[in-house]
Length: 362
Image (cartoon, rainbow, N blue to C red; front, side, top):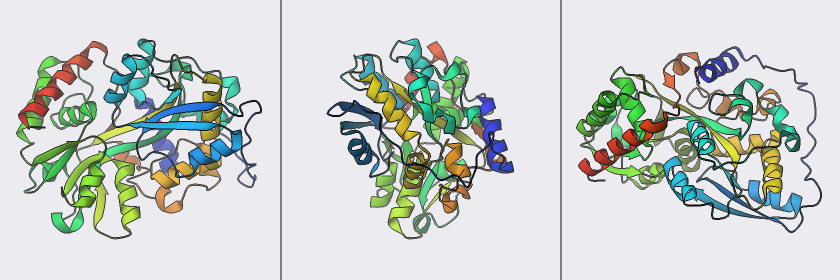
């Protein structure tokens, strides 16, 4: 996964695309293959993670119905699917979770011939260690975990995790056990993906010791608590806070990637084992990878796009593309880490997180 950080550094700092693209080329509207009229697709995705017209446009283009359901964490998604697929075709797990799902037989292979828009992805974002050859997954969007805060209530610019731990006011953490424990491990000077029980225990104790101001561990809705004024600071996914900032049309909120470092993640589309309609699922993936569709999603959600053609053709809003908190620069990238699959040690992280929740009363 270090390859991923180096790659993004090259792309965003030098601005050099990894394959030739004629920027004068006019994009043809995406056209749905024939033969899917009247069918149904079931999508299982994160909340607040798609443009408001993405689903409707696909339904109209293909003459189909999309059932769209959401989850709030990789763990909750996995827990549901481990009990048996209730009828979903598509899910959108985070990098390391793809490897877990593949190993557990929860995914089915992709037929790349049915996804011609793969050519628009930056080819160096493909073939990552969590899914060699992209047998099971295709990148959807990427971003960071950082700090969202109410500027007026906090009264200062936040640049450090220490300001979160020491804040004299209500704070919400993110229900992302690998991210939160990884951040603690990094601060303590350990490998963020450590499998050492003593180090995991140290990260647990660090979070407990620094959690006295925590009033909620939010299931990917910390931005709602922030907007309602229930907390002054939240640890959240980047796009959720930037969506709040955009909707507010005010200067009350800000997002920061702390100087000590944080998490960089990539979410990918997969087709689930037992999917009722895998052929239509591949059509959906191809549709999402259309440069205009992909750009519309990135512009709406304020997450970063892996679609190099969208970037090369200027389809990403410049205000977003030039924001280093959304598309991090080289200096910020040097402080970020990517979560890896740690096999059996996942149980140790889960146990540590359970203890944190109990002792913090969450």
